Amino acid sequence: ANGIPPDADGLLTETGIEIAEQLCEALFANFEEIDFLRRCALIDMAYTLGERLRDFHDMIVAVNARDWPEAKVQALDSEWAKEEAPDRAQFDAALLAGGSTP
Image (cartoon, rainbow, N blue to C red; front, side, top):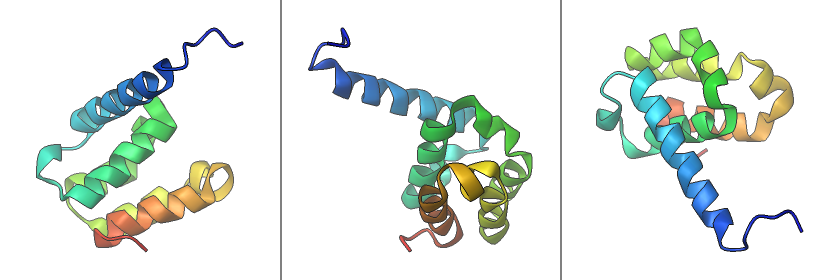
């Protein structure tokens, strides 16, 4: 066994999401005012990338300017999108661009 109690998995996920949301609140101006689906995409990116999300400088600038088409472009211009998790990146980028699922 891996030593993690069976009921702890959900708690770990919940804690990870809370940490991701805190990172988004630190990076994105007036994060709570962003529409729900775009917030979900950003939280998902923060959950997946962790502190590496801070390296998405141009995307952060675009989000803070509420330039959603540019935020999509910048999210996809990354190793994460091209090599690590292309399907997830495409999904999150579509949410950023349109505020809706692809």
